[in-house]
Length: 191
Image 1 (spheres, rainbow, N blue to C red):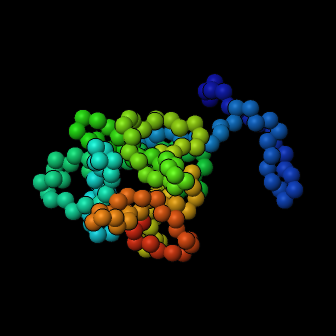
Image 2: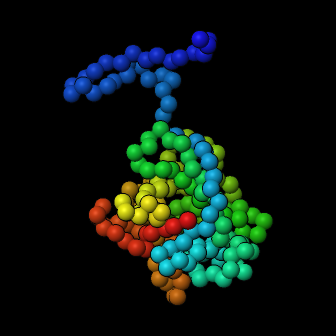
Image 3: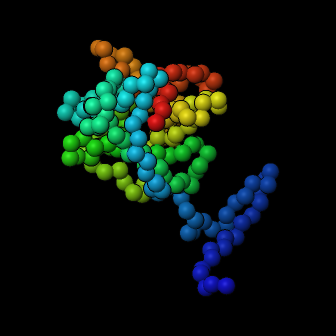
């Protein structure tokens, strides 16, 4: 037996046997804590790689040669997995990428009333005490496709990372899923 302190809280059962804590001092609130990091390239349904170009303020899926991939400038992502106190939403992740000698993290910002995906210079935080514009919930793309994923923005339910054709580019955007049963191939991302 060790002498480690164990927190015990008084509880009561309410109507419909709901559980209530008499005193919530010391209970953990919703938070994210970094658990592990995977290093991967991100591909769309057309097998194109996501490439970040901060100098042009753009992230787009592009056809990439083997030689360009070896260089990997703006293509090799770190996927930061977080532990959470609310696991039902999906696996919380954040994305960062190296471009030359600088690190950039993916986040979403409101601009002219629309939420857009941006890459800002800096590091992904180790611990996030509450809501954050850098967290996305990783979900399987379809039940029969366990190797493909979609990423829901944590601050706007139903908004997912996707791509949209614009001027010959397949730009990374946030897109609203119209119904839970809809399968939108522009949201499909593989590692």
